[in-house]
Every structure is written in C-alpha cells, then in structure tokens.
Image 1 (spheres, rainbow, N blue to C red):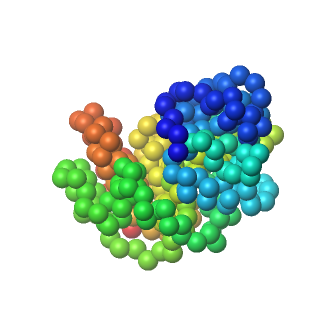
Image 2 (cartoon, one colour):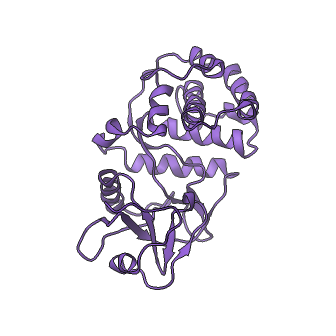
Image 3 (tube, rainbow, N blue to C red):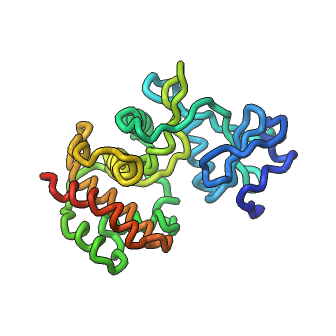
Length: 266
C-alpha cells in the first residue's frame, strides 16, 4: 500500500478512478486527511481489510428515515481501495456536537440496521491505541497505573449484555442537513453492547461540549447505563494515556464527569 502523508491531496489518477472530477478541497475534520473532489470524498485507507469490510456492509444498507450513510464507491476496476485511498459519495451537512439526543438516536438506529453482522476478525487483531483502550475499558487488558483510571475501574462490575458491531465515535460523526436524515459517517467499529456507542457520545459531549452532567442519568432506554458510562469514560481517558495526552488539565476536565457518573445508581 502507498504511504499517504497528512494533508496531501489524492493524485488526479486516484480521484479519477473513483469518479472524482475537479480540484481537491480539504474538508474540515477527519484529522486533516479527507478531501472532496467534485461529488466524491476521498480519504487515506488505514486497514485495507477493515475498509473493504465496512464498505461492503454500508453498500448493502437500504434507506431509513432515522439516518443515512454516504454511499461507498468502488474504483473503475471494482475495488473499494486503490493505492491507499478509499472513496464515498459527498453528502451535505455539518456535525453539531450539542445535538446529543439526535446523535444518539441516529447512532442507535444505525446500529440496529447492522445488528446482524457477525464479528469481523480485524477487531480482535487491531492494536492501535483506541482498540487497546477499548480492551482496558472492558477489563480485558490492564490499564496504565493512574489513580483516576483505578477509581473508575473499581466501580465497574460485570454485566450480562449481548454484543454486536457498534459505532464507537458518534458525537462528531453525525452530520445534519436540512431536508435529510442525519448522516452517520466515519464508522469506528467495536464489538460491544449496543448502548456503549451512545454512552461514549454522551461522555464526549459532557467532557468537551458542555453537555450538563445532570443529563448523564438519561439512559435512552439502555440497560446497564451507569456501567456503560463508566466504561465509556475509561475508554476515553485510557486513550489519552496511550496517546501521551493525559495531564493535570485533562484530569480536571474529566473529574466532574467521573464524579457525576459514580454518583449514579446501577
């Protein structure tokens, strides 16, 4: 696979292979890696197996009133990935991290639509910081030594819940446009209880976007909500540790959310 450098636009021949015509335009978000070329959006591919699997699943989805997804595109040879790039149709809209209820509803509807998908092998094989943090959150890997993580972990208990493929990064990846259902983008797949994606979105909103901590008790009909919130905060703070971003400022930001979650009843 060709190595792609941050903020380097897709070559003309790559864009053209997916049907893109025009001058590449760098889109906001997407870690500075996502480009629009006409009606086509292109992004560097991480794991080729994961990208191809997600594209295949998304291409089979029908239409739903609660959400939509950008249609993944094959190149002119019928491949989902070409020289380190994959593509999807451009759709209108922008994220709004303050619309927590709408984001959760769209995310849960998306997950319901893919609930029958079997566990893909790449989830277990993945070793990036986010995958490792997910395993920490569910007690499958020991966390870094830190009193904040230890306190959250001490509140966790085992729960009986069925697992499925979920979207683990919903908050900034649901786009809104007038006249369209919410667009769910940048699918981050994990194999966890369906409510875990919603819990991560709510925790992210409380930590970073002013979502009131007293709203954390709203469970959206999810069982084991307090336990899901604990694991969501463990997941995010463990990720910060593994990426080397954890600091006293981060601790102060996350502490009120932790206290509010711990105060809830199982």
